[in-house]
Each structure stands twice: as structure tokens, then as C-alpha cells.
Amino acid sequence: HGSMSGAIKNVLDSLHVQHGQPDAYFQGRPVALASYGGPTAISAVNALQTVVRVMQGVIVPTVVTVSRDALDPSTGAITDEKTLRRADRMLGEVARMVAMQQAFDAGTGA
Image (cartoon, rainbow, N blue to C red):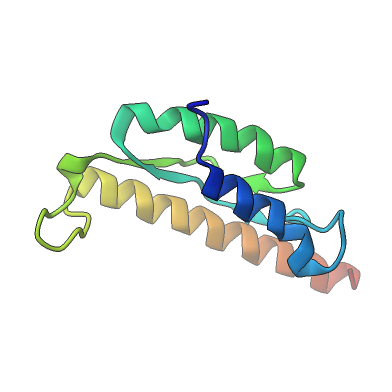
């Protein structure tokens, strides 16, 4: 209770089915974690960190939690500059990790 929703658990459970192999999961791919709900949402992120590691994912260092105050109430868009900068940094980390993995795979033929 309180760690993550049943919907998230169902998505995670279905990952191996999509790849057709019970051990496929994230296969060393970078994973970014973000949540909505401000400080209380960090418990879901903490739970997901453990799950992603077990599922062979590599978590990028920056985590983004979005509070209600960070959103435009009429559009739902993130308007808080600090949150936008963190999200940009997190996405940059994902892009750099993907580029490093591609360069490694190209150099080793993996």
C-alpha cells in the first residue's frame, strides 16, 4: 500500500509479454522516473527505483516530481521553471545514455 498503483504494476508486469521473453524487461536501457503529487509522490519513485533495477533498467540520476503548483490550472502544462529545468536535465541524461549505449554497441557489434 502506498508505494505504487495497481495500474503501474500491471504495466510493469506486461513488459516481458511485449518482448516475448520472460527475462527481457528493460535490457539495460535508461529509465527516467517522474511523478505527480509533490513530496508525497516520492514514495512511488522510491518503490520504482528498486523495481526498475530488478527489471534490468538503468535509472538516470535526475528524478522529477511535479506538484500541483507547478502546473497551469487551465492547460495542465508545467509552468514552474525549476520543474522544467529538472525535466530538461532528466531528458538530457536519457539522451546521453542512449547515445553512449549506441556508440558502445556499434563498437562491439553487440
